[in-house]
Length: 141
Image 1 (cartoon, one colour):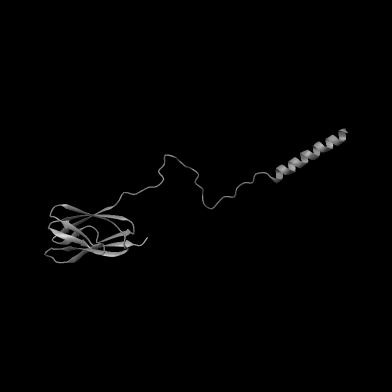
Image 2: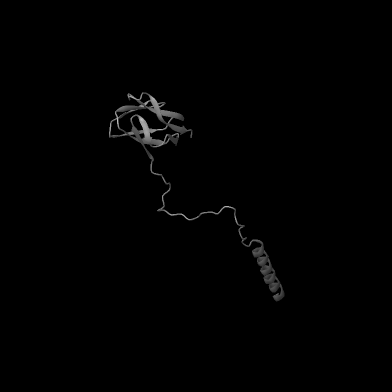
């Protein structure tokens, strides 16, 4: 009887050793892309950049400072501050937005770029006549 018990104890030990060896944890192969598991509750979820305000100066009906072309994507908010040395009306084609410019005062043009395309803005009611000052290019989303 002792021999039978010893046999079963040894057989059980061998079976357990084989099962452990067969089901042992495997080392993970290094992945091509690192996995970032660091998370913080206090970290912001999304970063919203501060809106860009373009500044355009006009003298005698001509653009003297600021970009000739402003690029944006459909859905973006566009803000442009205009200063002028003369009274005139600025018109943004395609959006049919008009803005009154007064000498020495800043006039703000703010709109959401809903239409894709290239849209010129020009002065009306100035001695220099109607001429394009610049353009706003809105790329489709």
